Image (cartoon, rainbow, N blue to C red; front, side, top):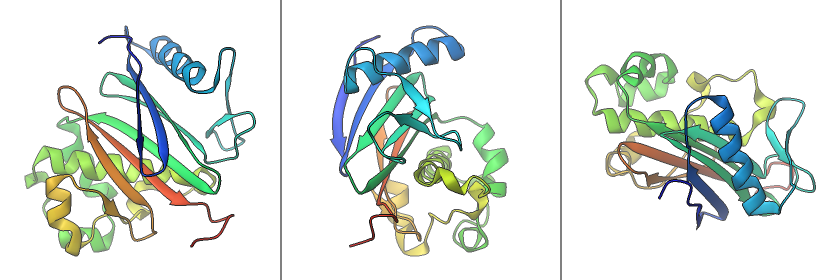
Length: 196
């Protein structure tokens, strides 16, 4: 399956993903460029907005998102009036060390001892926060510790890996990847277009 491009739709977003052949930024860029050309056509160049978010000419801000992790590259595109954010990560012990710092006060009440949680639960929290963060790249001063995705009423859904809705209104869905990888896809109606 190495090098094969997988395409699927989820929550109004089109997602393309492929494995990364090799290591390092060069391999990530090469895999991402293959996905961009598969999605938008040969010769299409992935650019960046002033705040560093990915952008493809002709598609508005927030409609394209990119992630590299869990051995794969991912590019997502959503429809007009929507925003998308994606994050792919492997389950790794480092998540135990950082999760306590990225939880909001409300989330700490739901998950008081993150170091004792199942690593897959911590992986879902991390990828959800990263994907939601990417929905609004213009909020670059915001930290993951200010993004509230974990609510007590959704705790069972979190444990199962079901889709959830963040306090800010973003829908986050999860896709299990090969090995211990996880992809989070966050979608939301663009605030510039209004919410319906």
